[in-house]
View 1 (cartoon, rainbow, N blue to C red):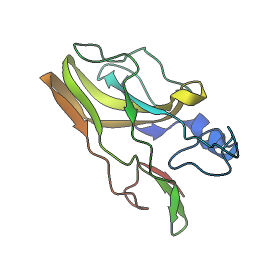
View 2 (view 1 turned 30 degrees about the horizontal axis):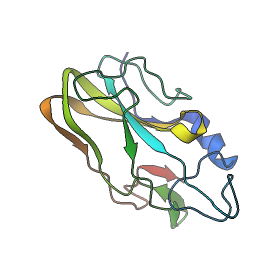
View 3 (view 1 turned 90 degrees about the vertical axis):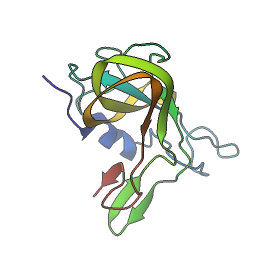
View 4 (view 1 turned 180 degrees about the vertical axis):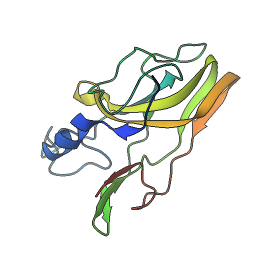
Length: 156
């Protein structure tokens, strides 16, 4: 099997249940009305030989890359852009590129899973790209424009 790109099916219902606090803090935060917080979103990389997709309900180490400079669970995503709408589509994109610095990942990888570490490592989605390896370098995932056509998360 192979990795495939998809929003986690569980994420779709969890959004409606208010489980995820993406972007800037609001007064309707689950945590506190007087001191609201955003959730910590993380990004883990997966081997090209893994089977990671929208059926994952949570982060899993199965099929995750390993190598020098890479920490299991991945890196923290900059979560400062508030979800918004563009026309009738709900949108959200991380506010900065996702960067893995000074890593050596010699086994091919081709997917990243975004997940909410604040909420029990709940899966958000899997995003695929061309197969990569990296030796003693920096791997950067540049985020798309936050609009109805390109946003990383689009709920129409």
